[in-house]
Amino acid sequence: MARKISPQLVLAALVVLGFALAQPAAAEQTQFIRLKAHMFTFAPDEIVVKKGVPVTLELMSIDRIHGFNLPDFHIRTTIEPWVSTTISFTPDKVGRFIFACDHFCGDGHDDMSGVIVVVD
Image (cartoon, rainbow, N blue to C red):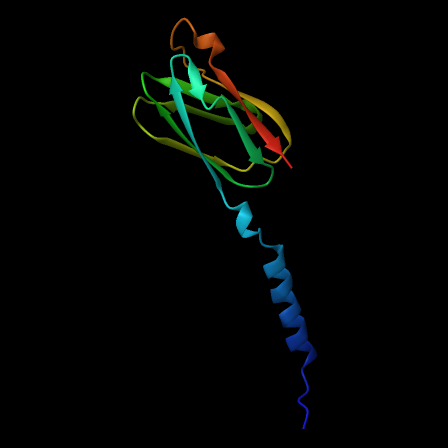
């Protein structure tokens, strides 16, 4: 004797399957990047990330107070010497975005910048 499957059960299964397929793939987990600030540079000074994939930046200064300003993503923080500062965001646009130290740190301060490259 064949069993009948109710339309409600089929609909519920399709909803669950659709939700599962809509979740990000394991390869799109948070991108973790360590960024070191020191007179008068960031290392690395170019970071490549994927659009729509969460990014966590761990910032640390190895000499003095610096700033980190990424205006295109409305991110700004102070980086204290030997203290880890974490910033998380999800890039929502593709392009090259400048970040810079915005806390005067000496004669080379104006050249202390880098770029975040967001790709599809």
